[in-house]
Length: 341
Image (cartoon, rainbow, N blue to C red; front, side, top):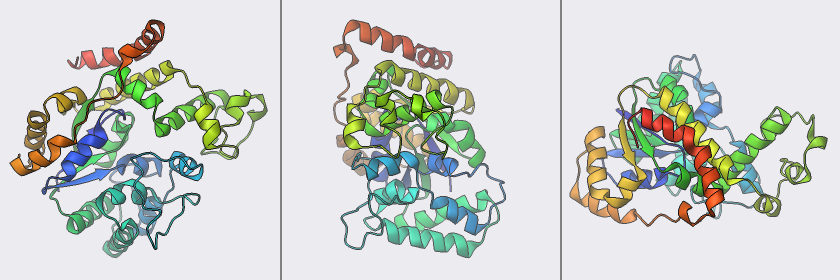
């Protein structure tokens, strides 16, 4: 099966694009699968890995997702139906990463779909990551339809090199959005705020307290940061935390610089702005790139999903906007070097 990966910074329209592609009968649209797989310790296509080991990796809990759910914080990308009768997981127990997003985007019974996937991987009994990914994509395509895989994970641009190692045959779609708009959107989104918080804690402590049992140096943390350690983390404390806007600009710039340097020489580029301004033309170009028919019924169903962007950096105070622009500048320069303005 041909595999395409949407490389993006997050908060740049990747969920919208994924939901548009979900409606195409030829496309298996996967959300939040490859980056969590990398974070679970799966490294490259030829990595020797038993079927049991790969299934164990699929059952990894992502630390930010677990922390937010346990604290009663949710975001629209989290789709697991906790309220469903017979749901296997609770908000305070954590859940395997494919169940939270990838499978919950595709079915109302992600637990059942996950069981089928695990059984198929075990039965196929592959010996390396390439085998297991091939089995995964084929199994999901058989269950949910589609002959073309398009995967997107928020923030995947940072992991471009690792994803290319996992899927050397994959083609890439670069999705961009104005750095200042993206950073402003990140600053208002709980998941990316928590990622930013973890970066601040890691800089202060020398390790990430959400992935490490170490607690050296915590007594020296400022009180507002000490309250964000996983053992003290609460919704109220997190929502009260003030994170500077230019931190999100720096995160966007870092993702952009690192990801662009790792992209293959040939990739398809589209912008969030073009997707909003001309969804029909932009989606036709995407369909042509991935080898899918630009079906008019699909275009008619997908285009209305566009809604006006909510983040308007020009509404910021001039000095704050200037700081944000300066933080984004390295990313803007990296895009310009690729001929993207």
